[in-house]
Length: 348
Image 1 (cartoon, rainbow, N blue to C red):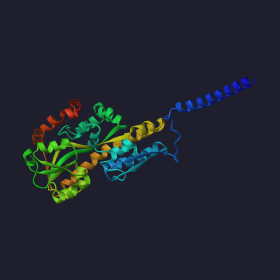
Image 2 (image 1 turned 90 degrees about the horizontal axis):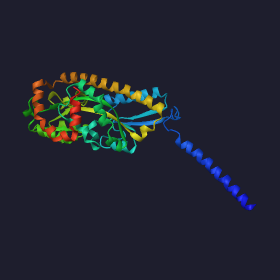
Image 3 (image 1 turned 180 degrees about the vertical axis):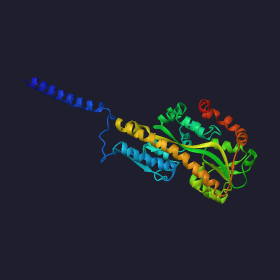
Image 4 (image 1 turned 60 degrees about the vertical axis):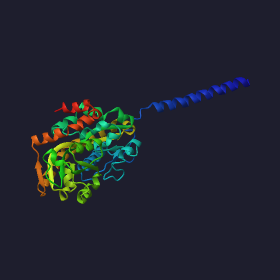
């Protein structure tokens, strides 16, 4: 009798444990990304967006527009916290912050991604893009997806989403007009970090110094460097016309941004909310591209009216500088890959 009672008690215990286990299994198998995930306006999903430019920059305006659109489209269930002007992280550490999940979204100059994939230096390859239309075709192409959705990014818990254009780069200096390749000889230019840019100035028989964006004005003012390269809008808003005498409209390279997110965080956003967030990003991207074009046009007019000498290079003059820069392709063609370079060229 005692034995039978003991066996009965054990059977009941087993059934109870099985029932509990069944509940846990059902809960674990429920998809985390279904619906809106139970988020509310009072308890929203928070997405931290860090960038390094001011709130009045093209990037800053587009980021704030994105935050507002997300709030509208998700009815407050997703809150985008925008941290501009390196409030959280600067150029040197924002990518590491994204990888670690300390922020969820960044919009760096694409060359910052060379830590993960050296192909991102494509933007510095001289005269790779012909005009803005060519650039837009690339942004929307399958060629662009090969680096936005690369295995290298995924292996670092990073996902590339879209491009936010900035503009073509142009040369300036305070010594003499830059028209011919030989005009660059002996001058020293401020440059972003990167081997491609070092080779670019070496090919022009010029020197270069890696100086942060925020310290460039002082470097030009103090004569640490003679010149720099930048977009119309960056040149204008940083007031480089106060410390430069000659500006050459060369369109020799690009300075563009891209939106990157922490992949584990992004993949866990509930389905309904993710759809709304992606719609908001598409709209903000259109705004960013249009704003960049408008602001660069305004800034070009400001530069021409500032009193410095502006030289609009002819096609022949650009071709001469381009020929001088052929060694850059010889040195970095394999690093950037022929597939990417030719893929971009074929989009003309």
